[in-house]
Picture (tube, rainbow, N blue to C red):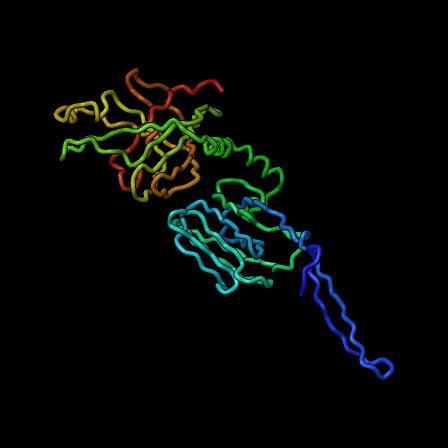
Length: 325
């Protein structure tokens, strides 16, 4: 085999008899020029679905990145001799896959996230001889609350009119808008440990986003970030009207006179995550019917808490009247 002008030539010697003499003829079989062996990079957005299997197109000498909405707990390849899958704790939401052979191959990959959801993929490699075939460089999985092209969930198989209406759902739009805010105005609260008399750091910080009124209901977008050094689970948001004199501002001997805060019923809420690794963030939106009136010293509060610190919620003041739309 020899290479000339970026083309691969294979020399084949054929022997035959002509006029009683043995003749040899060399035939050169030409394969495709190396310059034509290009990959077509593809970046895909896919919605997480238990009922769907996603085809991922690979190619030898290329690595594909799988980005997931939650941390990965396990990765399993059907044929580990044909495909390699890598996952590191330093990048809990990423999985890297690539073919382990230059020959055409096909197998499957199953990824289980710490939330319990499972992602199933079919791995397809056309081998080293593929010409100008698409290669998935990045496959970005999104939570089911988002609407992205490429999902096979029943929610995206509705009529065009229904999809158009859902894409304009105020909750979805507000959630997507909050998720695009790169640096929210984080707020935190501190709590006094009565046993040690020391100020303890909060496990979460929060930030308010868009606040507006829609058809007589208040809509509040928000973000939560895990400030602790361990995993947490963020609880559903609560709305309350506080009575005069917050517990943190009243001396211990006077706490028996505190009037409990009044809970405001939540109509609906949406979040794009629930379990957070240290430093990770989740975004959400909540709607509720605002009370008709309040006392001058009362406050309307968004209550956010984690499952392991439900007794120490983060309270974010919400304007009683939404700003003009």
